[in-house]
Length: 254
Image (cartoon, rainbow, N blue to C red; front, side, top):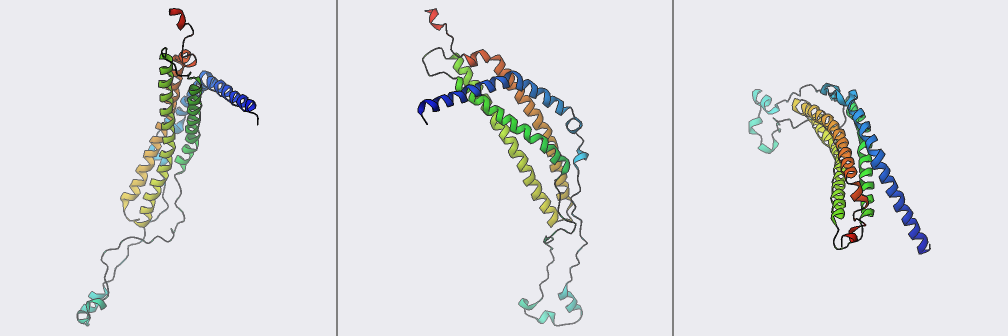
């Protein structure tokens, strides 16, 4: 492919990206802020009743296990248990370590359905913030002029705005990690319930973890809305400096 054709294609890409970014700032961000405010007003997010995310684990509590002390029975019967070598005496386990989990008698343990429904709504919102932040980051990068001495105040505004956008992008990516860590943490606690079904604290830990994630998902949507608002505000206030960081009439001062 000729070099001129490649250069033209790159320039078309840059022009298209700049056009998309400016449309996103002027129209896309305000629409997204209104959309998220409406979502936060729905019953799923506004009425935060923790009882709605409580769900049965489908792990029954087994019957108590009776441990027979064969050595004691042999002694009471007048046998020769005390005369046997220590290695030949039947071993008595006074501590039951836990239930061996080969399979669950009531079937699989389901995910928390109310939280899964919320996650289906929240994940696309987070992904969109990552994509929009990346678009703005490239837009400002293309607008930064070549390095020159003097008249760099507008360039510093671009760099500060770029740093803010990069921070938002990183924070949005961390929201994704938060969701994946929730499922991993819940699986670990549920496995403890399966192994020690008679310990109520493990069952309570699952409930507390679900309630924490419920609150976190609401907070994530609020933070995404706030990030859209802050980015829109900082870009609109400095739009002139972002698009034209160096004034064209600087030479007229001399």
